[in-house]
Image (cartoon, rainbow, N blue to C red; front, side):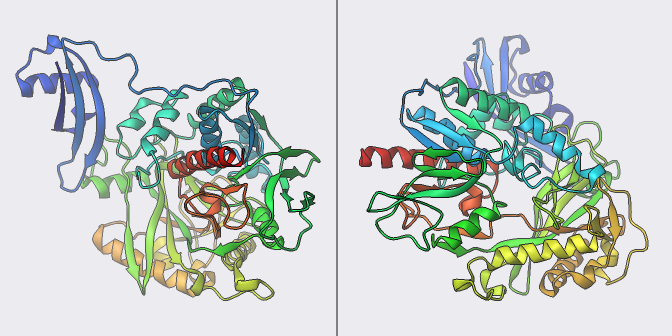
Length: 539
């Protein structure tokens, strides 16, 4: 017999299979010896009241053996002799596009400007002692994309545009813990995600695909009605043009339809597209700061207990949102028991982000605290038709200001939270997880007024709602700007091709069509399917 049950248990019983087994046997009046297996299908924490519970959906096998696998693996076949498709970028959008292409019988050629996930880690470690960022190998660029070393959270479960559950199963097939299939907020963790990414790469190579690191795209190869190739020289794209491949800065060219999955920080790509008349549009985003509290303080607040998480609960999370003067202010990428990291992707920038190891046992918990920004909120930039790059310019200017405030190093400007709200300079700062170091700075003075004012009002509201949240034990760290792409590469919603350039498939977060690891993976799969249909119709 197989039974699915809904359980509401204490934290002591919610994370141990043997405890769950005993609980089920006791509640159902079954002989525990007849229960051969209990599998957790869903798990979430209910901390709305003072007594914290864990809600579980479990599958109980009684006098029956469970199937060997907790999920159905995807079959990947050899595609060595199949038509090739160029995938630009080895983040989640590009990796899942490549794997789906293999499923569909097409050969992916993955081109990544950064290094492989292991060598990339060495460049990240150098940021602290050298106080500088490698513009081709950093928290944004390299195998795995921005998520590889900035948390690996897998929160998106939406099925509006594709199967998010399949993305999680593919992660498990390549080495992620099956717990991500059941947890309400699945999380692989920065310590484990690199190996999973390497296994995905090995699948691509084993099936006959290619992966090229330290190979940056410099231009699209555009084919026009006279059958000539324009290597980035055409001032505009005509209706007779189509994409024939890409050219790279190392002189190599790769031919085939192109899935463009370069991520939200590839500003050189946006500029090339703009300069060559390829249609873009400005897109809303959110900018703000990183807010870091002692983890034990967040545990006490969220679990309503002066003992914090106790012996069985994980580090506490929060999700906050507030409307201030017609714009949303909200927490973003909350990292319990995590670290604040330097996420700039070039010189003269300071950008901060957050990450958590899989065990989430750090001394601090942090979150982005950001303000919604729409294109109409930002002035048009001179000499730019329609100002389509103005949101990107806004990001750049704010990141450069932050770098100047940080003594033109990677030391980040920071302020105690209550001081920020009350427009006071902080004469010292709390300890922080931010490895390159902090420097006291009046963020209340130099942050743009619409951002500063809305953050202050939201902090006051959340301080009233959560006793202890608004405190000088917490640190406001500047700036969080890479919440999403500042540009949308316009595509046909049916074919997923660029609206005026056949053969180009803008993909994932960098194209403006995803927001996080899972949604980028879903979009990558959809783009792969669209390419397969394009080649079928074309050929």
